[in-house]
Length: 397
Image (cartoon, rainbow, N blue to C red; front, top):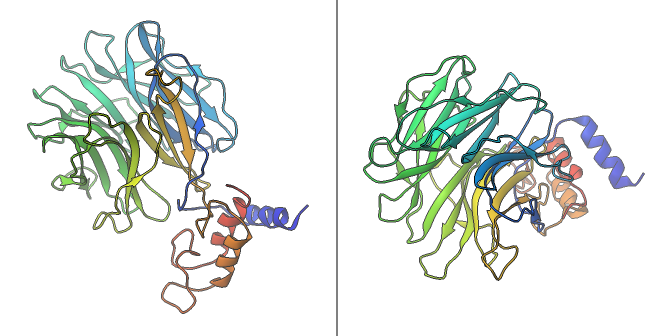
């Protein structure tokens, strides 16, 4: 066994491996090759370490939900499994594993003649699924749900609905794993269109809701925060304000405390295409980074979904029509992950990254010799956990 391999083995045995995203792998992986529509993906990780990607596929005249699973951090993926087979449109799926191990999927379907929300639950990691349960039954359209479980055990579903005459965001919650549900609560009341919500609870317990709205004349991103589990909310804060069309946000907080929002951006040009961008905040939204372009393909990249695994990598999935060009091309699912452990940002994890950590080993924030780049997990001290991160990903590019 090589010295590097022995070092990696030791660090893995010694403890868990948290990490923050610093640089991104050069590899963008095409996950589907179906010759029609694959769209609106969602990525999540279950407690056995597996990555799950759910999405909508056009099958004949219907739109159904499918999923695939990776048990090994994206090295390989399972065959595609069809989750719904209804002869209607099942779209906009969101997925989340709750504390009892149940995997929830919530989506919008027009099987009753208009779009309502439905959900399915698996208590055995996909070996079996419950029947689809209808969650909303309003004659208006209910679309693009986001599902999460909060620290008090409540399961939240937030979505966009046209029931007010415009589109606003609404919420339902359950304290008993879906046996009963609260009444629907309206979260936004602006006369413009508020759509495409994404939802996350942060390490300090605050709940963040981010969405796209055209209240300024074109779509920008907004967010609001609740510090009391939804009893009250801050005013809506505008996050983007350019002439571009910003839509389809996906929010998460990484282990180092940074809040990330990925989204689709289309510049104000007749020939522009959509690309995926992101912004992040290291101080709970007091300040934000500039927007950073994540995809650069000359064709459309849309509908990002983002998750961080327990091994530290941030995974982004999205949809692109770049295949089969120069025709319009069908839409397929793509993914890309962060390169955790690349401290010097040279797009590879090697001995130079280990050396940077070693130079500051044992130093606390504020002490001479402390290098914030070497504090990979951002906990204020350079220690074995930072070495474990770099050692685990040693050799990755």
